[in-house]
Length: 523
Ligand SMILES: *Cc1c(COP(=O)(O)O)cnc(C)c1O
Image 1 (cartoon, rainbow, N blue to C red):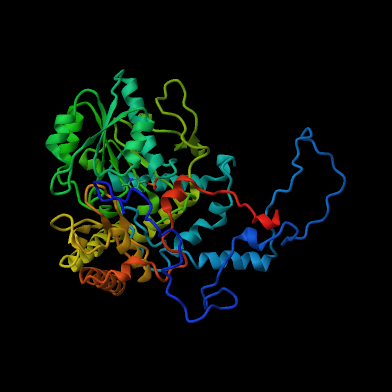
Image 2 (cartoon, rainbow, N blue to C red):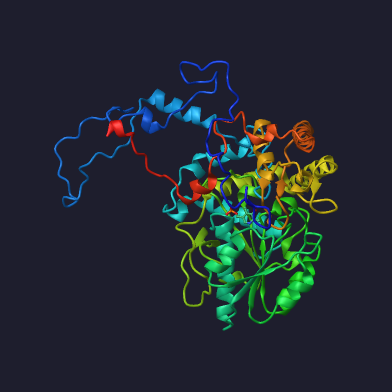
């Protein structure tokens, strides 16, 4: 396999794409194609036909088409299934999925948190679940009150004076923050053109800066996995608009010099954007406002338990310092004589960057996040951060002798290993991750961050019990010992027990096949 200098595969793994040769050969083939309770499932297009339907709808009577003869005449080609078969299809597919409700999900950087069912119940209360964003504000006072309370909690926990709730993901929050920085610089007539990001930055940081029209320059890390302050100071001049730094950083380490970093940034007239994706590790313990941060997004789905959307409803509120708060996007909740209201439009004196989303953001996520905050209380939130750090350090300490930790000393909420311990074994980080699937675990984050070779970033989640942690650690130890002992067969064909083998992920991402074409014989 070809690797780049950081130990990340650069090409698909030859010969391994979806081939079934490595599957453990069963003693017989079943007539049905099912394997015990692991049911074979075709595509819904292969199962259904356009003439079948799960609903009974009366024929429409005579009516006139009013779309100027532009109506479709060809078949749409959607498959139809009776209801029981549709239910079975999606239930069978869902059983092939792996989620946080199924087992330990050690994906580093992403914080897969347990979502308490209480939050779900609250989000489904009709007063929250059934409202519409265009309803008159007098009829949604409770929802506005909730947004106001959530803002208050977020500002208190971060020690920042203002928050914009509307951004819809961490990456969207970054866009919001850097746009506010841009607006602030433009307001003072300062055309700076560079944004500095550390080498270990999440890809969204440089992407955001570039999207906002900035040149991105990278700042190196020191041997202890933290930003090199001297190199940062050297790179800071009057062309630098902002520095984007993740704290705790993507190596799972706290940037201990963060206050000096903030001072240096401000001295150069630039802004400090903090990527707050890892706030989970410090909430209730440290406040970004005290560390000199000017803008920071929170990923509600990584910190306050709301579900990871799978492309669905995310939420990434952004907190702002005094220097930036006037430039925050609209709308925001205000309290007037008649109760709560939304400040929706900017007028002449407003310096707001305007709107980032239609409506007001993800109400359902606000309800879940506030439910999480209220049910935990500040002490519970602090404990969640402490337990996240404890669990990660338990993993780090338990695997220290057998896997290679990338940096010395304790970590925050995630433990970073590299592939040093696999040297000369013929087993790669990718093989190791695939073997974890056979052990019943979703793999850890691999080949990120880029600053260590063959990275394995493990984030165990604070809600995992000692029993779960010990089982996971047992599997990791077992795999590491097997690899070091030279038993490569366990890894070469892994995953043996998964319904699909090593897919060609590069090709799937670059050349996705999004359209079903029926086999020749059906055409
Ligand atoms: C997850 C993450 C992001 C992006 O957040 P999304 O909500 O996935 O858009 C940005 N930075 C870091 C460090 C992250 O872990």
